[in-house]
Image (cartoon, helix red, strand yellow):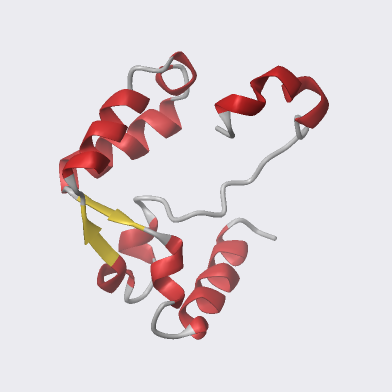
Length: 104
């Protein structure tokens, strides 16, 4: 999605291909021990998701829309930085696992 403030420069900054490395809802059932990293949504989180779901760039992207709606359904989020708060091995294991899932 990027920064709305940098929208004016998007043509010059655009990448030809992006890979979502962040945690996705399907990772919560596939990645070992991922449940321990779930955090309940706060009222500001729910408000932000509602705002995002009204943006055209989100509504036109089925994957983004699904992920945000899934967060609302479960009432939880997972922040990648939480994976390394206790032990950096968690984050390293996730990145290795995610790259393997993507065939990279």
